Length: 433
Ligand SMILES: *[C@@H]1O[C@H](CO)[C@@H](O)[C@H](O)[C@H]1NC(C)=O
Ligand SMILES: *[C@@H]1O[C@H](CO)[C@@H](O)[C@H](O)[C@H]1NC(C)=O
Ligand SMILES: *[C@@H]1O[C@H](CO)[C@@H](O)[C@H](O)[C@H]1NC(C)=O
Ligand SMILES: *[C@@H]1O[C@H](CO)[C@@H](O)[C@H](O)[C@H]1NC(C)=O
Ligand SMILES: *[C@@H]1O[C@H](CO)[C@@H](O)[C@H](O)[C@H]1NC(C)=O
Ligand SMILES: *[C@@H]1O[C@H](CO)[C@@H](O)[C@H](O)[C@H]1NC(C)=O
Image 1 (cartoon, rainbow, N blue to C red):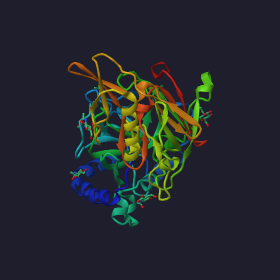
Image 2: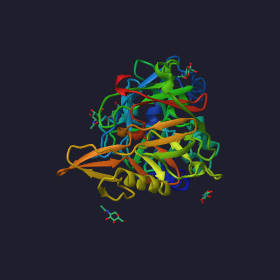
Image 3: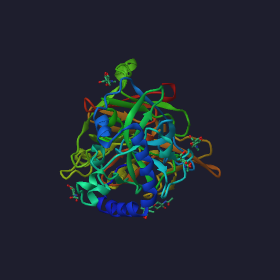
Image 4: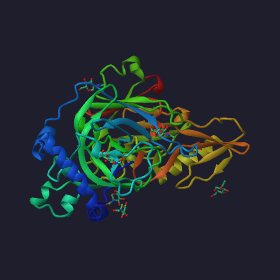
């Protein structure tokens, strides 16, 4: 998922949450003041404590599992399992390298989507604190109540209310808070800033309780942990096997088969600094390099277009003209009966006799210095219909930007080397790592 900049809309809606939620938020704040008083923490102490956050002394490991599938069609995400508060309350958050904010649904909800786990109850945590408008974390947010109300000096100690939106239209409104995060294996971080989502709407079907941003901005999990790198390895999306996300990756992790490691630089886009842009140069379908000039995949001068890698999007999306070439090349080379003509919402599918997995053309993405020669299961998926097998291309038509989705990243170690500004990947059996 990609964060959107719909500030006007967000700020207008923030006014609603601040007024309609006044009574409920008053209760949260009273509870909070009580905790602060007991622990003798003033906002100043808290800010000081946040400023002193230091590097993790050990690797933080977060187990991830594939989210719920939607009737066999891959449109899911991977869920990161961690816990928040003292005592710890479990949360499961969509792993999203296309956004920054960490948030989970919180009581008292104004409007929450259904979640399997109990909703995070701030009142149960002795380490929970609210962050004021004056906090650095609040100022890192694109849309808050603080600036909407015109930030007066007196307003600065007001709680920080945020609005945050995603490319798929999902929205979360709530309060920016801080609490202890605990990871697998006992690593814990005493103060992490995150959103306490009170009004959350949109597409939340993966069994998540919120989203954990892994983007390049200051509020993301890797940024708050100040790690130099992180890696994930997505197990089969149709399965349920877990695998670890590592924050602070041991140096030897890729050493077993060095020749298979592909590395490509990240590109910075000042207009969208949170996103991990890559330099895509071309696409091969079967035996044909598609006739697309390299410049078609590049960022434009005004910061639109380009190619990103995103763990929170499932199927890879190409701009419509590029997608059409991929689509037509598959039809021309697969030489299989077409089940449907792809639309904005349905991928291209072919039919074949029941139980068969027809041969399909290869799909290769050429990056600057790296080649992603996708195994079949990373770009095709199978459905069974009455008396026929349906084989579909897990690639879609999207907006101006090319988005490399998680379906294309299954069973690969993906290393985001933030310190050296590059991405590496190597094939792996992710349920064995
Ligand atoms: C919750 O947010 C939605 C927009 O996503 C807005 O339409 C609605 O009014 C908000 N509800 C409340 C109670 O603030
Ligand atoms: C949240 O925790 C508080 C404090 O224990 C409790 O009084 C309240 O009932 C809890 N809320 C819910 C909805 O469970
Ligand atoms: C949803 O999450 C809950 C809590 O982790 C888990 O018990 C359940 O199996 C999950 N459901 C699906 C369909 O993945
Ligand atoms: C990740 O960063 C740490 C700390 O800088 C470094 O020691 C380690 O070698 C890095 N891991 C990889 C795989 O580059
Ligand atoms: C950005 O540039 C592209 C091509 O250079 C152009 O098609 C597009 O309209 C521009 N968008 C904006 C918002 O200026
Ligand atoms: C797909 O579109 C083509 C031309 O637009 C049409 O001839 C064909 O019948 C369509 N196929 C299906 C399965 O809808």
